[in-house]
Image 1 (cartoon, rainbow, N blue to C red):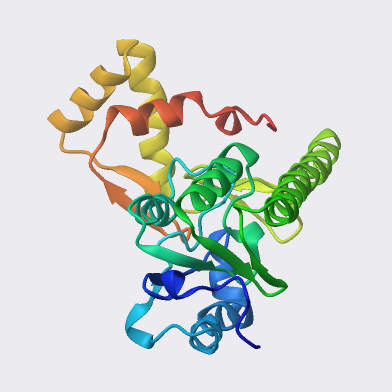
Image 2: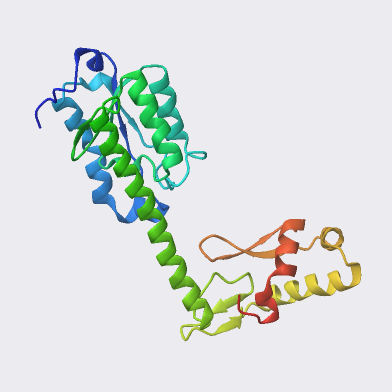
Length: 256
């Protein structure tokens, strides 16, 4: 890759920032080749003229969606550095990884154009300050947002169709398990079943989730809870946990 005519000595006095992102979290684990390609962009920055000391990698947004920048510390840090005129080039394997929301994308283009920051991906280098550069980057951002909405609509339609025929297997609450045949049964652990039943019985007497917690604490009783990997653990009762048990329709045998 040869140096682009767009790159000036002024750009080279600033940093080249490589933005790395993947979502959802499981892609970070399963799509390792994509991550390797993104981290390898350092070689591209060196070919374009930036020394190693002037190349930064921002990977704070791994596992986060680009649908909004509000929760993305990496993206916001990048914007702050561009605002301070510290960045001469933003480098991404695909500019659509920077943002999938036009309300975040176009302000970034305006900022880069005003502050003299270039944007590059595997297709080329763009100057947001020029008409052609802004047009191409704008089209990529618009198509990225459209693609996100299309994928979301397709996924949602599939989930709704499965739910309508009762085949959508959502995570079950504590005390219920799904067999290999797809049927839902109570957990064989009798102590856990008895403790869950006691939650409902106590609530019928007290009519208050906080009072249920008080009763459990007075008798030093723990609540069975399910960890993120599905293991059963015993924890101190909390109002939020009691409310989650009381309001979950699966305990009444309802499919939701």
